[in-house]
Image 1 (tube, rainbow, N blue to C red):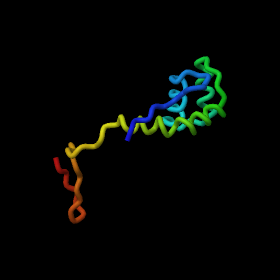
Image 2: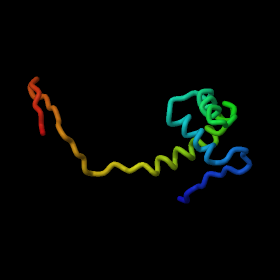
Image 3: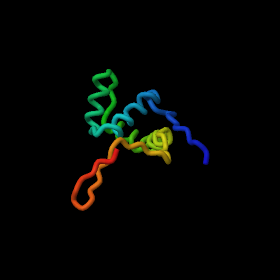
Image 4: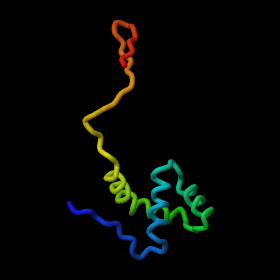
Amino acid sequence: MRNQDIRYKRHRFPPQIIAHVVWLYARFNLSLREVEELMLERGIDVSYETIRRWTVKFGPLIARTLRRRQPRPGDVWHLDEVVVKIAGRSFWLW
């Protein structure tokens, strides 16, 4: 399987802004209008409808690349303490 690059051709805004807007919407539980206000505070005038289109178009691709960057869980687990109930009594395992 080949790695697909995200194509930002024919878009008015730079790729960094598009990726940041989609990340804001996906990462934090914000509405489209809240993301629009955040970008307006930074001096970038973009409508909520444009943000919605970017999320639909670029959201799955950006999410896929972010998931690939996350470390995979390993075979070794480290626990500090565990509480086990045996016959109704709690026992602390260290």
